Amino acid sequence: MTRRGAGLALLACGIAGLPFLASSAYLLTVFNIIGLSTIVTLGLILLGSSGQVSLGQAAFYGLGAYGSALLSRDLGWSPWATIAIATAATAGVAYLVGVPTLRLAEHFFVLATLGFGIIVNVLMVQLVDVTGGASGLRDIPGLRIAGVSLAADRAFYYLVWGLALAALLLAQNITSHRTGRALRAILGSEVGAAALGVEVSRYKMQVFVASAAYAALAGGLYAHYIRFISPSPFSLYASLFFLIMAVVGGLTNIWGGLFGAALITILDQVIRAQVPRVFPRVGGEYQTAIYGILLVLIMIFFPSGIVRGALDLGRLLRPVGPEPAKGGSA
Amino acid sequence: MTFYLLQALNGLAYGMLLFLLAAGLSLIFGLMEVVNLAHGGFYMLGAYLALSAVRWTGSFWIAAIAVPLVLGAVGFLLEWEFLRPLYRRTHLDQILLTFGFAFVFSDLARWWWGADVQSLAPPPGLDRSIPLLGTFFPSYRLFVIALGAAMAGGLWLGLGRTRLGAMVRAGVANREMAQALGIDIGLVFTGVFAFGAALAGLAGVIAAPIQGVFPGVDFETLIVTLIVVVVGGLGTLPGSFWGSLLIGEVDTFGKTLVPQMALVVTYLVMAAVLIVRPTGLFGGRPR
Image (cartoon, rainbow over all chains, first blue to last red):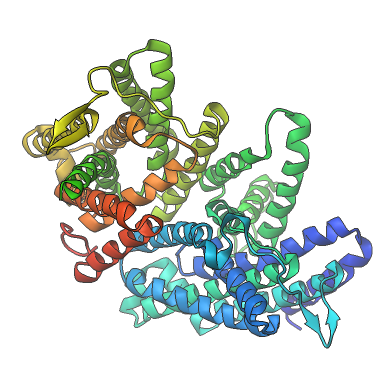
């Protein structure tokens, strides 16, 4: 078994055992949110591996949620089918967004994702007949297997984390084989990669579509878990939230995605609980400033993520000893 | 017919506001390829600061002069303290940094000025409607059109006919070459960034009596400005100007004719322009 395989097995065991250690409904909900966020963040990291970033990822998350909720609620289709359909359809939408923008310089793509995120959120609020507007959609059917409901937090926990681990494995597969080498070449230098025969825009499109599918899958699961959706969890602020999760982990580091999703979700819970206690007059709406500052600080001090930053710091603090023969690379 | 003409004038006033925003954003991009996502924040702070300044001093004109200076200073600090250390990194890092600041500005404003929609009265003398085309039109909007046109002319002369303008143009055309010729491009960029912030702040002051100011106006404005800059062509002044006028009209007529879908119409216009000319109306070589 490789080291990676061992790490993954260990992680799977830890995740499987966690509900037995911490079984309160609140903690399970938090873990489930971490699982959903992990899937979205992994998508952003796949995208980051090609040197791109999406500022509107919450829109794909929302398209998955609204698509699956509407199909299952109004047409009575099975939520499993509608999650799959909504995920595929969202991937198609990402393709349409990518066609005109990915061939242009990186800025166009970044701006397009930002604009797309905003316009999708505006449509969610304004297309009242379809989306229910700001008051959202109620009575979304829950997930069931053979007549057994997965609505309970613990049952959903195993579903979402099973899928999150699958998403992680898939992302690792993508980034460690041929596509991964192509992506790293693109990350290093697009012109260089193109000169070596890498079809830059094709690979960029593939990871973009994959990242949208990841977000839509998580969104579909979210809709059938919470069973109520409104535009606000899919706003620009949510995109910032996902972006920070990815950036904390390093934007190209798959395991960092898991770490970032966990860290930021927990931080968010702590902020929501503690800020009103410490500053009673400050409402909950000021969290985004905290995340804005966090993004600024990470970009300045830890551009390759907090994990890598901590490792670098640790290396700096290591006692100086006789250099090993092969040294000089640290 | 008169209705459409008046709407066209409204669109022109809005377009002039957009030009003040787009000119700075576009020049900043042209010089350093930094897309400043905090630009909408400068605009919003400009409008809010104008509210406070008018409350303190009682004069719209003092606000119109002081607020852009304050935002110029904010822009200077942001560039000097935060963006500058990131120049050796990728543009993506810089974009994400300004994205972070956009949210900081957004929440600071909500904390300080509250979440309500607020508006500013036009200055005395410009607060009436004047007879025009057989009906009445707000004189303040005519003032905005005149001011925008004057700023456009001033910028055009400043960029085209002065030594400083030549330095900026040289930087836009070829950064390394300009630097090799002895232009301190870093300093030029700091200046352009601060100037762009001041222009955005001025746009905020000028817009406050027309559009009002409310939480979220920063990102709303940022998106429209980005559309203008993309439609006009990144880094070109004429592109910003004609792009602003086009999008100003499209947005105004969109809001009148299909109120719920105005943003969608604007996006469609952008998509149409990009399909025909991927580098924008006035964009030069593809980057």
